[in-house]
Length: 105
Image 1 (cartoon, one colour):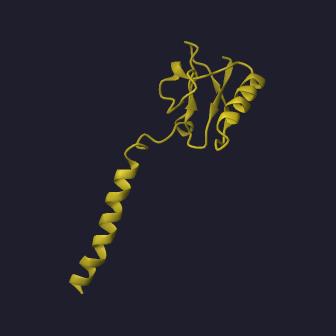
Image 2 (cartoon, one colour; image 1 turned 45 degrees about the vertical axis):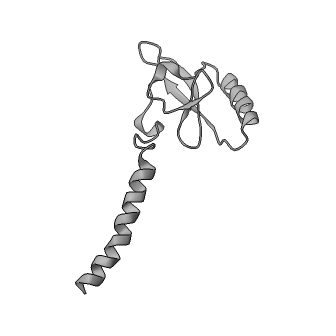
Image 3 (cartoon, rainbow, N blue to C red; image 1 turned 180 degrees about the horizontal axis):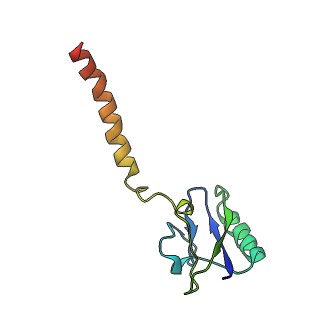
């Protein structure tokens, strides 16, 4: 098996062929190259467009169909979109707990 190089940002999102940051669960849409120097050049060009990005080059093996095999720890968590709503619910529960403690005392 050979390896390919992908670009990953600080949020564990991967760069797609269209230049968008995606979660990487659809491996066929990801930007990939067989050459590390080409990935480095693309990383520099992408960073020039958005200087706030913190990217790294991710090396992955290919499966039998020629798609990158990503480990679970290389992908962002599934509940990224719903995390903000869940977090606010947790905060509401935490704020309600002191009131319950005061009532029980």
